Length: 494
Image 1 (cartoon, rainbow, N blue to C red):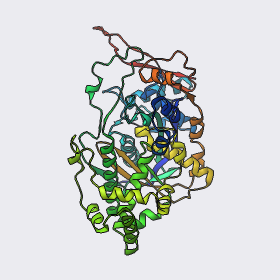
Image 2: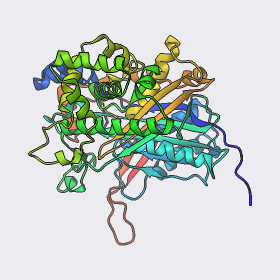
Image 3: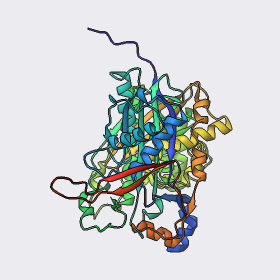
Image 4: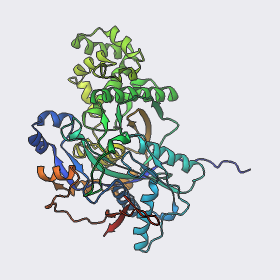
């Protein structure tokens, strides 16, 4: 029997992205809808992207993967794992194999070898956490039977919300591919030091298939994928799952929470819109203060005093371990499980410590993210790509430095995973090209946005695809000896 070989560090060596060019400025959107631009700018961001009539989650994913292979000069025959993280897939049978097939065709057309035939092709689904689960699956693959090979995980999603809903300004679309291998060039991913949490939350954010019944999407065949969601409840779920995943990591690593949080310089979190990660990290800081020294508790007490909250009542609330799913009813959805904490948070936001311990730690890449909207599974890796590029420009990261990442998926589950910056991170970052992708944009008018959102093709949409996959046509045969009804056929546009 063979013994296990000595393990090597495993992590991310490269990132590549695709964002659809169609852009909606949120200030314009506020003028169309009558919403308050200052509030939307503060809570949500500046703009979001919309998928085009010839695009699907698979075309975006495949384009990101092909760019990753090109940008990092990857030998496709070494890729033994290709994972797709998404909650927008439109085929209930095939998943990552669709992406592999598209990329293989483009590679072969260039005279290059295809991705290895022995490549595994799983799809991972758990709301916005699917990509993180895919990354963990790829790392475990590389640590065992896939040792010595390479893995790619692509996170791709289309976030659509009904017009007039509270989620409409948080829409977005895009894909980010990650290259994983031993002795990584960008960052080592520390799974043994990570923390996990999960709990069933009933109707936090769901996509039941019943929503598709009766849809007429005959012009573009793009099914509307509007989620069932409850905004305030979703925020509560995000905060609670963040706290639970952090607690799991604290226990594993025997950390003193407040000392650890203060030691970090950079944090990346799942970001459905601007305010959400700020709120999640700020609450984690307040909870950590309650477990700290007398000086730490005094800081917390000062916020309590300004908020008119008794400090001991707050600490009792923080230790209460409430069950969030008990709020999952029409009568209780507006309740808070941590009402005192949220009141203290409003005071904390005005303090200098909020800038130092929250905003500064979330700063890398945050300005770029104001123009992306919600990318679901791709939100966290997109922020990583933007953050690494800003760090390269400003020399903000150092080899060996710990960076904390937190992924979250409604329903609910969270993963908090330490990354350690690799020695060659600067060279690996220089190949990402995220800024160039963001510069390519077509600004939509009200009429164009409305047409695209309703599944129609605007007559004056001026964009010519280039270096990307498109949906060439959709099958409609439904005969005894041949059927391809609803199957998308793809083409790579050079």
